[in-house]
Length: 156
Image (tube, rainbow, N blue to C red; front, side, top):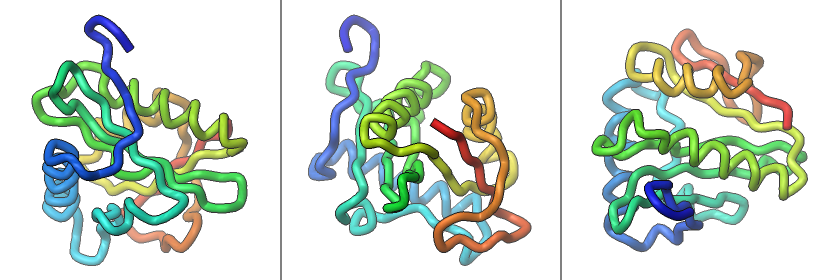
């Protein structure tokens, strides 16, 4: 991408800016979720086969991260979406979501799903996903429904 647009690249999770944003993401998930209800992937979880993570950059500043996990049945799961606080409400999440959706289609996936929480900390993400055609649905993969978590799905 050029100009003021974000440059999105596959990330090998070796750079400090990415690792710092991942730490911030995990801290935020733990602070906003009841014990036992955080399913965000840590560094080791993001480095397994079947998970691709991308980072969005403006110049040499990291603006956000997002990941796609293949569930092995023609579906994918969106993981680790986080916008850097300095780039909130500037289109980072939209750009990453577009990129992840295009990658999922290119890989032949027919549906994307995600698990997220409830409450004020999760409302901006929920609004983004719903605006982009994701709808509430059933638990998937190994998730179990609780009063806190919710599941969104979108056909591709």
